[in-house]
Length: 244
Ligand SMILES: [Mn+2]
Image: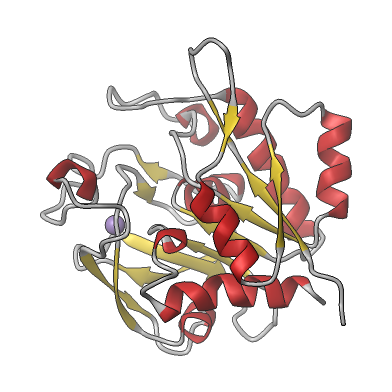
């Protein structure tokens, strides 16, 4: 029996709270474990040497949701709605993307994660989708009192894309808890999933023919694993890819 792969899971950090804490929603840890992987939390407080050691030892990576990136990383001034910016987390996750891409290590990027992935590769973000670009779709379902595990808007996935293959579907209903989104795609990334307002909801590495697992989704599949087989497939295939 092959050893279970170690999946590095990035964590949030409390901003402006005492005592300061690193934390991550249990749903991510459970989703990785249910898929057969061992989640290894990677907190922003790590020193660079410890961080590099963990990067080297993990077989795959999961970039999790959370606060906003500092828009200086894509040469923009902060929008007034910007929240929970934490430079240590930005630095660690941007470095992790480069390590994972260079080492061809499997990577699944969720919510803030797809935004980090995009910015690390030179892309930009809409900083507040309700006003820029503006939309009729509710991408912040918690504002309507909808629970995190309730799908609320449709997504179409490009047929033949790697993401469609991994999900096993080209049309799905997803949950939505984000106020930012991918604008210009980063180098090497292709948008392959879209909400009805054409906001990017999924990206993948440009060459879908390679078996490189490098995917980003704007929704929260970790909250949907009990009810949605596409969510289970995302984590299942991340762990499978990390076995190689
Ligand atoms: Mn959405």
